[in-house]
Length: 116
Image (cartoon, rainbow, N blue to C red; front, side, top):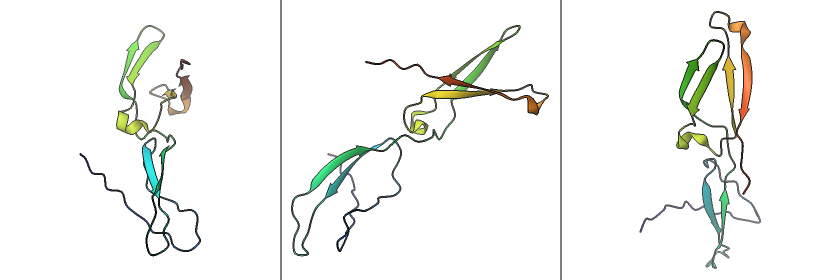
């Protein structure tokens, strides 16, 4: 049995909301709320929620370029799972002439999704 530390926060007065900060993106959290009259408390109400996706915190891995006479095939792996912060939906490819930084071109590669 693994015990998970759940910090508790006491909200006094007539407040009916509280903001919990410092949560990680795309992670499930279970929250629990118990009412109290100062003497004792009743059973709790629980809810599980998934935090929304966030910008990936790491780049794609293992980028390679396979050149031919007039093109190059780029291949990569997704960012490390811990750095994805949700579902990766596409990639932005930037390229330029090595000798001319003003010639940068951008291409967005959207991932195809399959509906079940």
